[in-house]
Length: 307
Ligand code: NAI
Ligand code: 2OP
Image: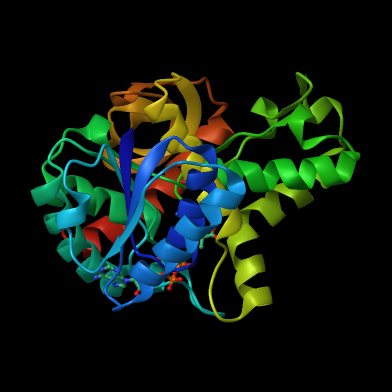
């Protein structure tokens, strides 16, 4: 059985564990700094498995010994947004968390693939790459799968069609200037602009960009976790099953899309080696400008951290 460790047993980390246990694809370890929480959530989840009929091991811990030899480590440790806060307000606080976490993770799982979730996502992924010393195929950030799922939700709602028919494409950093691409978004293979008028598409693009804030404003005490954790699971499964699945992920660009030395969301092929290929799709000048603007926002954060 593969082994997946989840650091941060809060809303997103614990929800990731629940979805993953249901897939029966890996033994799980939950780590958190709060005493009793990872142990309690792990035992509770373990006790659900006879009902679900799933045989996986789930362990909770405040230390990292139990994570030793993980195939994948998902990092959700840190703090979520509160109303009025941007993802970027979290920068310094969460950087300090990530520094300690990545050091411990690498010590016990030097061959793992790291999936970053903590915000601000692209900057934290860049921090993890640098702090871990791992090659760039083994450090990636979850955002594009979530942002694309949100866009697909809104498209399916607007057209009254099955979500299974909708395939959306969102690139760029995980911030308000992310880049939803209607031209590459399809419903049963039909490009979105052939199905919806420009003003409807513009409204969907706007709602997608603000999708995280929409949930924060409703919850008031934190940010989204069901869709984010489901997005992590799609990435984990693609890697563990060596599916070669093409998903939008935040990865370190080294000249691709004309961007160098920065984590930005682009389509990648995910397989057993992690990021196995970065796909460069053709962009119009407007789309390219939007991607560059989004990348510039990420670069600002990365520079504040001196990465
Ligand atoms: P949460 O507050 O429910 O959970 C965070 C957990 O991290 C807490 O249990 C806390 O005790 C733990 N933690 C804090 N410092 C730690 C440390 N040094 N070591 C181990 N654990 C530590 O928050 P939630 O909703 O789970 O979000 C977690 C992070 O993920 C936030 O930064 C949030 O913004 C981000 N996020 C990013 C998404 C994305 O699309 N990339 C989507 C959802 C959340
Ligand atoms: C979101 O988009 C919190 O970044 C997270 O919901």
